[in-house]
Length: 194
Image (cartoon, rainbow, N blue to C red; front, side, top):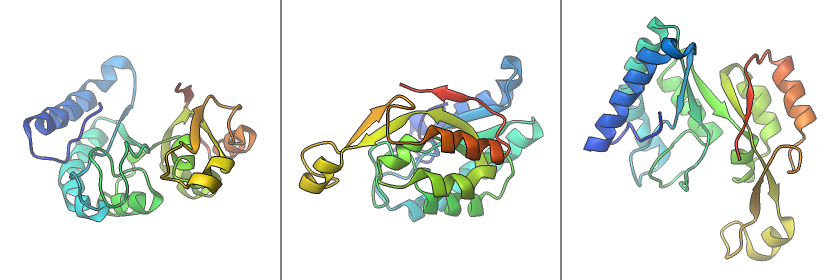
């Protein structure tokens, strides 16, 4: 279910109804996981979305728990930053802490991929260890950081410094990632996203 359920327009209402329907119908597909963006109040810093996030996702988390369904938020910034954006607050570890404090539910977690952290120049391995109990789904997507372009143009210059890649041909150490997932008890799949 992809959309922004934290705003107040008609598309937002459709997104929230889509969340409810996805949760209610998950069992028909033999699944216990609904994945999406957390949404965001547009063009304000992440903390200003947290109260709205709680209002929307506390009842959705309760609804999901009553049906044996987990909720996982994709960690893609969708072009946003801490200060502003249109779609998703669930891209940064500090935001995850705010979100998990606001909706303290065992069935609310992450759809995690190392690529999304690398595009923000975050080392994915330390957070994988910390957030392991909240990682419900993994995307097998990697990145290569072009350090020459980063050194010359900076992270927000005219040339892209990060290139999305398939697993194993990017900068991530998939042996370490898979080992940590196994040590942490991860039982789900790693779905290749290209």
